[in-house]
Amino acid sequence: MLAVEVNHIVKSFADKVVVDNLSFSIARGEMFGLIGPNGAGKTTTIRMMMDIIKPDSGEVAILGEKLSEATKNSLGYLPEERGLYRKLSVLESIVYLASLKGMDKHSARGKANELLNHTGMLSSERKKIEELSRGMGQIIQFIVTIIHDPQLVILDEPFSGLDPVNTELLKGMLADLRNQGKAVILSTHQMNQVEELCDRILMINNGQAVLYGDLSEIKSRYRGNSVMLDSKGGLEEVPGVAAKRAHKGYTELILDGEATPQQVLAYLVNGGITINRFEVATPSLNEIFLKEVGKKS
Image (cartoon, rainbow, N blue to C red):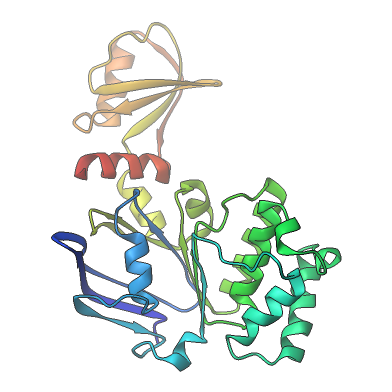
């Protein structure tokens, strides 16, 4: 059974179509990246999946059925707009919010202590939320999201405000969730995190799917757009090269889409350039993102 099935959903506000005939699915035990520029329709899509708003048309199935009050307790949602009660203590906040997901207070307290200990925040359990740093508050918000053992976890910009240590901590916890067979949706502008963590992605722009599928396959389709070159000799104008970027130890040649790496190599050799390294590069997800969003905007 799939964790998520979205079929041909459409959503408009006034006369603007925000989500336009969007379809995708997410398996259990999968880390799924939902990416796109600001205003692309990501948050609206998430809100339709959460049944916060209804699609104008199309269907959403979560864990094999339409979302009901019972199914909602199988979801964990970390919204971009954070929502902790600032005057409550850390432990009180976690236990109260866990009770809203159907946990009894004794179980919630035990699980809260376990997660606080795992994240190195047990000593802060009596602190008020308003006393915490932004990054510490983010970790507490994540604990609240997963404490009730959800089968589907939806995270909107989960790394915002985290230092490198807590970023690595959170990434490890996300990997644990996936290894437990849970589906994780990661929506973020940090393409390096998506590239490191996600199995598959959906890139949307103007409410429509731009790229969808296995991340490694998508990246392989863009292979050949750039070349890493270590050479001796002048590199003034090279036909087929749209841009050059200097890196430590090599120059990256960005191809214009018309020329092949083999044609560029032949031109350099025939021009008497001494080549120490010539390697076809697989572009980063960030480069693919910029290329596709620029094309469609």
